[in-house]
Image (tube, rainbow, N blue to C red):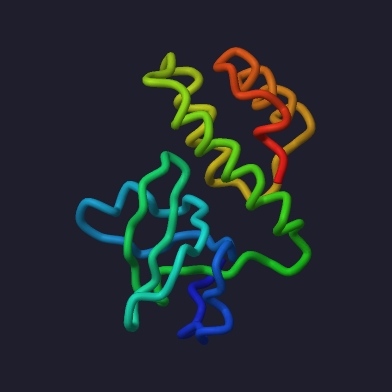
Length: 132
């Protein structure tokens, strides 16, 4: 995907989901990950990422998700991953890698949905908490 031009304030509405790009320094690890807008701070945008971290980025670091993607489902998946990080102190490496992987995907397969559901059940995050 190509990096977008500057986003308008209308683009940066709370819970809009973007892919993070061109981050540097400590935030570089979040490149290619999905992020949900939490708010605007001057010319910067505050976003939540998959591991419940909140970071502040420039609008140039937000890449729009194609309109063909189910954005509400994408937001729900990102929130489900965040709830897992809230409930579990640590994960086995395979689970951590799985969660990192799906936090970079704009389309999650039915099998990946099932695996995510199994992890939620194992961690005590029940279906009622995983629905918007």
